[in-house]
Length: 361
Image (cartoon, rainbow, N blue to C red; front, side, top):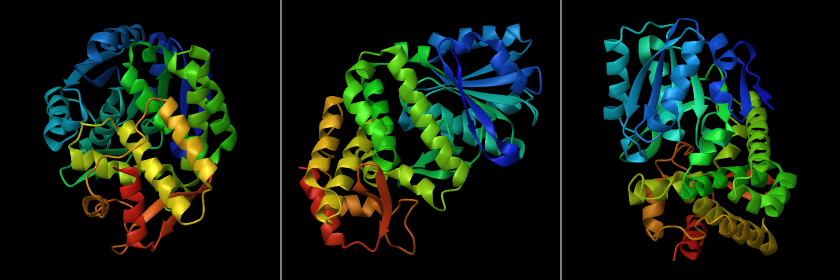
């Protein structure tokens, strides 16, 4: 069964298709390809698993595919790797209306989307996310970027795809660590705006860890529905969309401070969310039983409950490079309760440091 959601952005609206076996259905893809040529950007891990399947599907629709296979890993989310895509596009005589298909996880989706935004000032692209994290978060909403040594995702563009194809079957080959990392972003939606979903996750997490297809499809659909609503209301993060960054300011500091790829993105976000929960508690906003529920769910998911011991001063140094900084002041996403997130600024740095130290020792 195929489930369909829509991201409502006027003339740039697009569908999200969710289901099993979708990668083999040309009728889902071909309506979004203007030319009979596509470029498939993927990586060395995903290519042996799904590239031939996708090329065969496109061929059934009369579409030829030029593959671009990148090295796998967050550490390759750089200008140098991005240029490999541009080399292939130019070398393949790709035109502005050639469609770029990003086949892979969040790194591939971010780089493929950024390349599509830049090449000849914009070419159409399609997201085919193959990890849980990318299916529920990074493939939806049009954020594309590469990393800089001083900060994660600091160079990029808002650029929406023509469609998103989330094939649940691709999660069968996902390593356990990657699956658990994806759950961090799933849990996030329950924390920021959907308390009933958080309670569902508490009751069904074991099914997700066991890769129950029905449970995974429900979690992906519910997560995407939440994100689609937020993005439709606030595409460029001037308001509500900032709440999707719960745990990310602290988590990005962990990723940058340790070196990209040492921790998976979801692992860093889990630890960062618990720092945010600790700070929310110290501000008198979040009750201790709620903090315990959050920590219990992350631990059950096999995710870190403690952040990297970088030291509070180093965290603050890295966090000041965050995209949410305004006029030099940190803006953090915190919790009033499970299901209610807020953006807070002007916070006492001593209290921020105390929360970091409490959760990073």
